[in-house]
Length: 194
Image: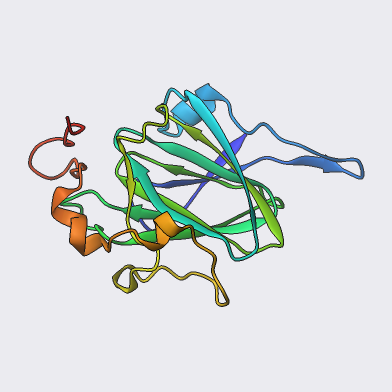
């Protein structure tokens, strides 16, 4: 059984699976479509990704038009962040930051319209995530994880970012062109460019 935990923002869903463990280790059911659908997560997952990173590696804030994600940390620990980038949302530019680790094996669901990033807080971390659409470089983009206006509570200490992530624009620079519109706003989500 999977339990839904409270979140500050409307949209992301923090989930905690039931762990069955003893001196040999543990077993958990990390995904069951019917249980997720009962919690309001009714995605068709088409791609699984796996990344391994060292302490202090910061990946993000990434998003792709039309893509939701289900993220968990299978090894180590990360501070995982969902950023609301839906134009017209009352929480636009605000983040949900949660610890995902290999002890609780909590998962974070990010619906379409949220950017995603994480920072490794253990010596090494394996982050695995399901995607509701295939990776498409033409639809994928990002905003700066270090944008001070976002107030993301990244861990203290040296952070390692890719050149691409280091060069990502501040949210304010791209806000008007973002392809996501909050459902409570006039109109529906913008269509992919092209």
